[in-house]
Structures are given as structure tokens and as C-alpha cells.
Image 1 (cartoon, rainbow, N blue to C red):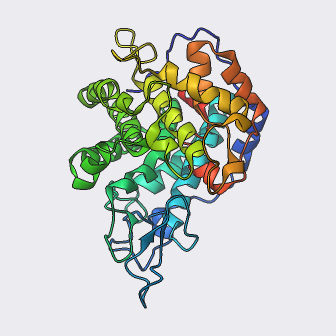
Image 2 (image 1 turned 180 degrees about the vertical axis):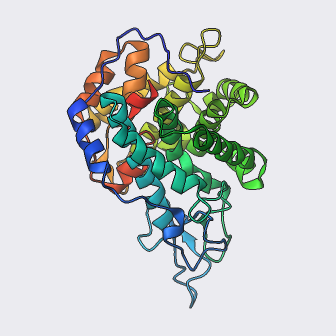
Length: 371
């Protein structure tokens, strides 16, 4: 089970309390969304099956029907089907801010609405989302879904943290709570055994990191300590191999959006350290024999968040102006490591980005729920 009792060097103080409560108020009347609300005619799945298209894939200019699609790294095709992505992220956002409202005020109306979102999205027979991603990030003319699509559910990590806070409310009945645990247990099982999941787990870039962020969160939520231990070990022996001697991540700096991806991967590596660290196995302090660590990664990226103009790599081909944004690692690492400059950065950045790319690439909508 996810644990919140952490020993911080700096006492946690809720950031942007008034803004968070405003967002909670806005979420109260928001419609309850379901994966079954929209469906793409391109999907090979049914009404309960999540579907999306690969971001950087476009119609083939050399064929009459545009198939098979061709790759343009970093350039998002606006004609892609994003309906399920948007619904999932909006559900997450509503649940997160409603839960924040409940945590900050104790008012049951917030919890009741959050639980309704969860119940209808994950559990109700007519509207549930099936616990797999067989049809995520499909490529037209190539494949009906890919392992790379598992990154689409990264936003559900926020949801399991919210569920644990909602346990205190009478609205979160034992039946609903156990139903949610079963859904995430089944999804985790699919991730770990399906060919798409195994492919994603073995990616040597941010996709592999995001796979383990999800596996860790869902394992802790479902009390699967064996998988949580596997994630801890792989962080040390597998994921840190992606880091260079200077703390950068070459697979990200070599992309067409190096700034965005470099921040993104550090954000998710921090998430792993936060969730998986134990007194007897503290990932925050872990260093490989050749000197790789989360602290070195933070030391690399932080100066370029403070002073973006010093970024030594090419600017991102799209959405470069959308970053930096309020990524959760600024809070989690700031509190845990006693790094006030990270907390100050978080407070200085805009409370909410209006750029869709930034919103999509921020894994945690409200990191204070993780503490």
C-alpha cells in the first residue's frame, strides 16, 4: 500500500492552497466522463477498449490512401484520435482536485463526486474502461496498437494516490475500494505479461522509466511487494544505465525535443525514488558504482530550469516555449532532499500551463497528494 509517512528535511507546506481549492470548486460540477463516451472508427477494439494513435505519425504522401503512416519525430499530427486520452486526463484532473478539496476542507461533497468519477470510469458495467492498452498508440497501416502506448496511462499514477486519500470518506465504500484495487491489479498483470507491456518495460529511454513508474505505483496500491521490489532493483540496475556521467540522459537530449524530454525523464525518475524508497533501501541516496544517481540528474537539469537560455542543446522543434512548467519533481525532490531552490522554482512557475503538450507531459497534476 502506498505510504505517505516520509521523513522530510523541510516540513511540507501545501503549495498554492487557494488556487487548488479554486480548482476543486470548478471540478464539483464537471461532467462525469467515461471511455465509452467516444469511439474511433479506426479502433480494432470494442467500446470499453482504450484507443489512441501514435503522436508523431502522419499520412504517407507517396500513397493514394496515405498508408502506411510515416514517422516525423517530435511533430504531433493534429488529426490523431485523442478522445480517450483527453477523457482519461480530464477524469484524472477532476479526481485529483476533488480529492485535494476533500483533504484540505474535509467536506464530503468533494469526496462523493471524486468517488463517482472513479466508480463510473473503472467499475460500472456500462461505462468501465477495460484494464489493458492493446490498442494504444496505433499506427494506421502498420499495427493496431503498440507497447509504446502504455505511457498513455502514466496519468493514472495520480489516481491511485487520490484513492488512498479518499479511503477516509464514507463515499469510498469497501466494495468500491476493493473493486478499484482489482482493476489496477488486473491492469498491472496485463502490463507485466502482455507482449506490448514487455516491449515497453525494456525500452531504454523515458518509456521504460514511465513503465516502471506505473508498475511501482500500481504494485504499491495493490500491495504487490514482489513487483515493488522488482521495480526497486530495476531502477538501480537498469534505469540508471540511461544516465550519462554528467547527469544528462543521451536518449532524450538526442531527440528533436531535448529540453522537454530531459525534464520529463527526471520528473519520472524522481517519482520512482519517492514511491519506492524505504529506510533500508533509500533510492534518493543510491549511487551506481560508476557514479550515476538521481542527485546527479537533478544537478544537471536544475540550472537549465532556472536559466533556460543556457540550454546547450538545440531548442525543441515544437512547444519549446511551454517549458519549464510545474513538474512534480520540484516538490518531491525539494522537500525530500531539502533543496529550497526547487521549491522556489515551483512557486515561481505558472500555476497551470495552457499548452496542451505541457499538460500531457506533466505526470502529476498535484504532487502534494503524494506527500
